[in-house]
Length: 343
Image 1: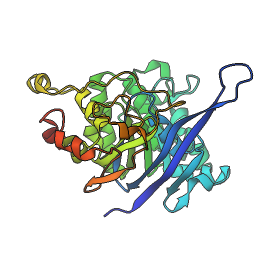
Image 2: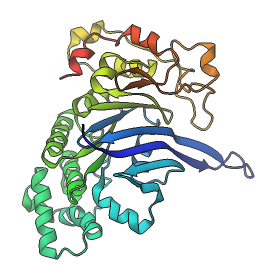
Image 3: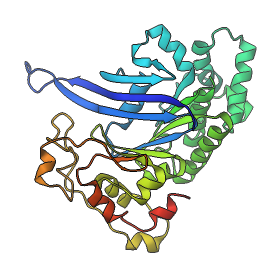
């Protein structure tokens, strides 16, 4: 079994927001609430959930781009949350991120070569100009960008090309872990497939470990080894990809699977559609007990009493539902997920 590179231990990130009224005290928004998981070398962990559930905040908190307010992030035995600013800069050589909006993440005043080389100036300032240029051209070749593009500016590129620039910037320091923060959500479907295939290829060639954040389960299925389902900042299900797709153990996961597109129109017409009640509650004032209970189709009075812990429901498969066995008995919302999970 591969070594554990990353351990996220009861991680929380809370933002203090201005209260309503001139003299009202600030209110706490728990964007990430007591999240724990391990990540092994060479693994891809998919993090899924609706918009606003805390996926991006979790990814950035792991890298300390947003400072967590509780818990630990242990990277190869070192607690990143305890490092000083200078120590963290050194640790960032092994850690990188690909952002959601490929155009907005690139400085329009910088050339492609300067954008890609920027991390090297921090991670390896001793490199001379010639060596830095060689690294940039190598990274561009890895992501399918021609050398003559190095002197051009971001506005001259399409969204897919701009995301390739962002990926080249992410791999330039030869990191071990990359957080992919919804890297294909702003792209056309045909371009999404190209970027997903590029990331899978880079993972194999460079031995990368990935955290892949998305709201689209059909995309996550293509790249992930395990899936973590997040709702209102909390983990509600965590398990191997095949288990989560074939044997969902939380009603929220079943709802997400129900909404995932299926290319086969016959199967799509015949599957069950799980309709959730209302909108997600505010993270400022979440429901008591299980945060999902206000929208859950099988909620019972006991669900309002306590927040359910993650319990084992299978091999390396956990669910935060008091009635996980009942959900497992329902099966996936379509019989096709078991086969497609292994595609």
